[in-house]
Image (cartoon, rainbow, N blue to C red; front, side, top):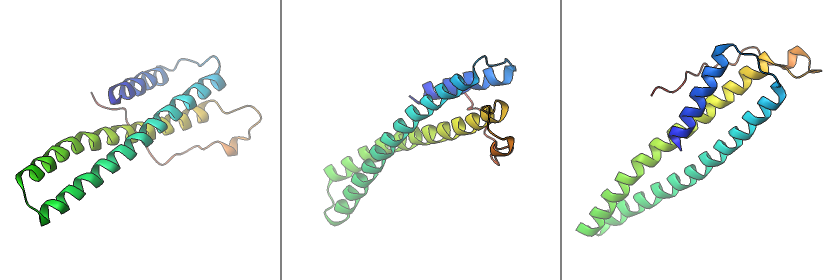
Length: 134
């Protein structure tokens, strides 16, 4: 999933940097919002899984402190080895969603909705997000 998100962001960056005019900006923004919602859901699910995995890992560590045994130590090491990729994956999802937020704001700035006063469209976002490095 992380690679799919990185590829989506990379392609979106390339499209926006190419300077091509978007034929239907409103439909483009709605499609981007659907993608953002999808990735928000994915991020939330992975947050829950990562959090529960961390709780189990800490619980095993606490039990291991009071009842030291080799099987508990092996379980702790296994959980710790599995927890680290979960954290890395959640990090990628979190940063990817944040990048999509900034890109949506950039598109909104370039193509404000008709009838919306220009003062309602942000001109500065305070955050500059670079595309993911491969």
